[in-house]
Length: 177
Image (cartoon, rainbow, N blue to C red; front, side, top):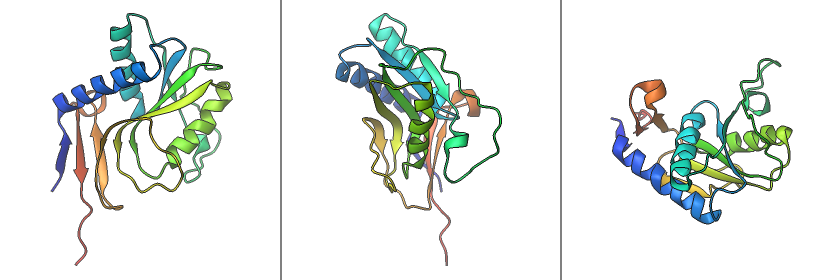
């Protein structure tokens, strides 16, 4: 049976806290840009950038990053790149955003993909859910919540934009008998 980890209001509060943590750690929004990993890191990145913009009173640029060609587990033929980063990242503080961190493989691919746009001053990582089980030594700088799970379980982050509702659900793997 699915277990609700965050409902819509908890998710909203969590993102608000994360936005304030990012701004405090960076001394404000100067030279800060936000990049969301497609597909589900993108709506999270937009929300964080919007919340930080409201706090700072200055627009924080936000883009989306397609990592398909940089993944080590799903190599696809060269094709369309859905990335949209309409701003410079060279010498900027890049907040890389994804909804869940698990093995670290997606973030490794995202860092590689990001570097084709320039060399940032630094890359910071924000995730809504950390569920552990790293294969790479990659840890988030900002984390909404940590969820204890089994490796076979699944975290489903729902967004109004895609699913008609906001929330985070832990779906346990079926038990073997």
